[in-house]
Length: 316
Ligand code: PMV
Image 1 (cartoon, rainbow, N blue to C red):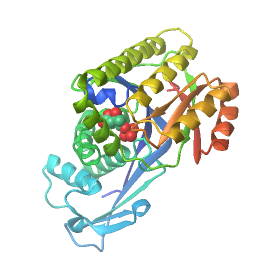
Image 2 (image 1 turned 90 degrees about the vertical axis):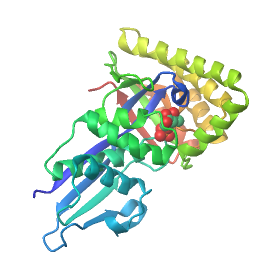
Image 3 (image 1 turned 60 degrees about the vertical axis):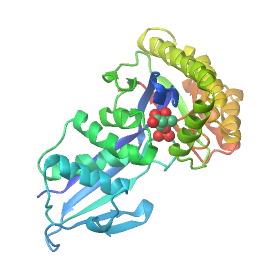
């Protein structure tokens, strides 16, 4: 059995995070500068039926049979085996590595699941379609997020810009005029499940107020898609990002660190900036002209970012 390597990119949410859980549209794009990788190799000296799982980033080195059911990594493997109707594996070792920061809004959980699902299915001679991979990864996302919208596993499985509305067919779209984004990491891990849970409680306490904010986020996402699909200048996305950030602050998912980084980016010439993903900590994104991207990146480092990625949206 040949060794199989599968990779999956990171992602960022450009518009609409959180509101997407409540049925409003959101837009996400893959980020190929970071990725998760799964390497699956037969182990000729191993015992049939036994898979060794090694993920040094999370200090895991164990037999699959010994990993608890609720562990997301094991759930990705077991879900794939079940889907394929395989109950006995050849002896093998699965190694997982990732350059995607954990719990930072860059889709690390979904990317690891997708790399694993692809590696396991290809290793067993049944490579799965993007759609099948997406569905299996969604089941794992539920362990990470509680009530995931499905946007992370979708954008990563298809590795293309996605306009996502929960429960509706996936809409891939093409960005007509590429633009530059600077992604700044606060360095604060922020498990999405916490922000999503807090927001749910707030919404339950005052549904009308929160529904209004979700509507506002939905309007912004729709307007942003129009800009991206037309010949209009992508600079128009800047004010929309600022508006979305204001909504996210009102939803209670921003933080002083995210506010500091978004303000620093704007002061350094960014055309707009917002948090991206679950919020509270994790990453923010800023829209910058290509010539000012490095200036924005330095300003983010000066304001406390622990990592900065410059990426092109819509370059392929
Ligand atoms: O995985 P993150 O942190 O990028 O966030 C996911 C986006 C949320 O809208 C906050 C949650 C969801 O399930 O869509």
